[in-house]
Image: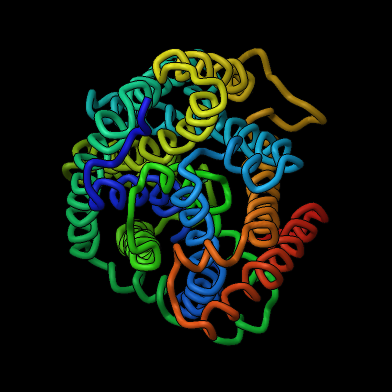
Length: 432
Ligand code: PHE
């Protein structure tokens, strides 16, 4: 059977933007900027993206494009002894997906609640068994997309989702900026505090956010690259990275004016999206429309990211065992649902906890934070050190001097930075 292909280069770019743009852009980025030096944070962030994220993206794309196969078989092609590392990568992505689907299901639920004008209390919601229903529902949408294939599923959905997401985001930005007091929010968000640039934690936050947001180092771009016939990888990777940054910056322009106009706490994480912002929407005119749009946009962003994660294990099963796509998707999806159930149920009456931490929070830390950095380390070491530079540069182009600098980056700088970030996280130094 011949390999599946993107129908056009644009289709590939939109699918990759879909993978990169996720919950991380819309609610994580604005908060991290606001608490790490405002506009000044863009300096370490842009450096992280272009110096570390982009070269790793290009590495993954080049390996996938050249070897024309997905993570497991690609790692085996690089060296028989790396097959196990490939499997570790596939397992990490599957585990991240299992809990990412839980967050996706919450935003899906909230968009419906707002549409039906039936606001709910977040604790009451997560304590009930509704999240299980939405977990299965959002999982099924992701499943159906991947099951339909690269062109008919992933590419088709990305062509609709990305423009729609951008449209909703722009609408919300305009609306937010029109609120009285919006300027104060923008000032908090973007006024640079350069004194923070000396703080290593700010840099660590930038690296972490850049890797998470670009979906790099997880074999996703390797897999997506394997469906490309020929492409300018440098240009494509740059377009994907720039779009990802642009959407993240826009998201901040939507969130901070609202937070300031309504005088609420711009606090971190889960509470911002599920408690603070819903309360703001509820107190506004047209609040239910805005709430519906906001959560629908988050769901669209999460959907294409989840699709890209599911494609990694599915493609490995197809390419390694010759399974037809439909059967491979069913098999992998079944496993992921089982893996995700403990996270999905962790706040219910069952109180699934380990060492006093709900399993959802634990998954977020172990898989979403440590696992992600660890998998980036695997990719940069295996692909950076053991791939023949000759064919790598045949894929990437560039002058000899650029190529030398590139090797230096992917072989030394990126693994070292990732390693330091991993150790810092394990020691519990908060970064972001
Ligand atoms: N990049 C996605 C986001 O910003 C998250 C993600 C991480 C997706 C890793 C896939 C893999 O939310």
